[in-house]
Image (cartoon, rainbow, N blue to C red; front, side):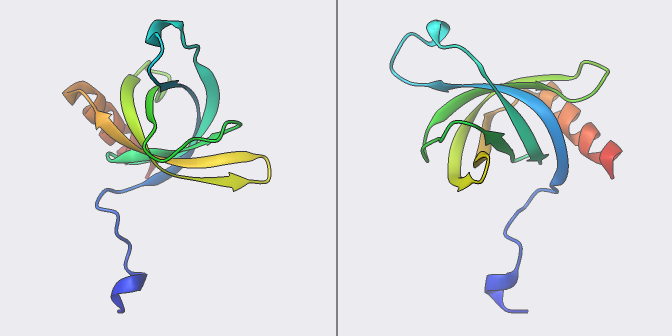
Length: 116
């Protein structure tokens, strides 16, 4: 197989839509920035794809939080925007996790395994 057609992802990714909250961290007072709602489109241990009404810039740092299932497995982490593209009804952005606790990694891993 040609190298350009290989999937470069190192983590298993699943498609799943979940309500997500995020805020862009900039030089202003972080506590004063309000969270915005978005939809997660897919997730892996390395990051997630976010659908939002707001365009994000590559390199933006975000605070992202979501609950993975009815068991209240919460994730509240920092992410970096790796890419963003315009869609008909908003924007899709690829986010890479920067900080995940061991517990959050376990929640995500368990969630991915349950969805398969």
